[in-house]
Picture (cartoon, rainbow, N blue to C red):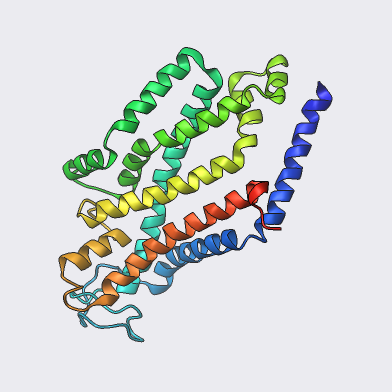
Length: 294
């Protein structure tokens, strides 16, 4: 029994090394994460280098891209590049908060329901189904509409609290298939408790699946937040890529031919979500031997 238990970490270590070997050679994964990292660094470093406040009015309104204003200015003279880098930071932040909260709740519910089964599974599954059928966007619209002060953190919180059900169901199904494996039975026979078995035996064998789930939740949170921002229910302070699109639409940037106002935030959202999707496909190829490119 001890020999079998000791062999598990060695097998997992071998699988990690094999996955890393194929990961650095997967073009989709490297390209997708490369784009995300570049935009993340731009969002973190850009505001520090550019300086100034993104919503400050300037003296050169409706100015196209130039050496002074790299992405031009709005109808009020606000620097669009400065808004863009600040918007990237806010967009990543809401993705981390919303996707992280949804991932934590989904994992807790999915692991417990899948491992315990019985009445616990029925109760948690019923709760998941109730949240799943609630029109999430409509609920978020109502909540955001009646909040006096809206922030990126609050927006991410509400997105996370409503986005977790599909992840919980997927993790529950995977846990069901793992709880009857030999290594789980051995851990149970050795006297390990529920949380120890879940954290030490089941979760590590699902690490790749959990990471891919978080990526999807991360991208989903960004899309939902951008949708709320575009219809005017985003943060009341600061700036985000969705709010940039909302302002460009509100002040008729398209009709005025100010393409430099709405193209950068639209391209930024598309690049982030698209790159995450491409990276997720690459991860699937890395972790699934049948899809690997030799």
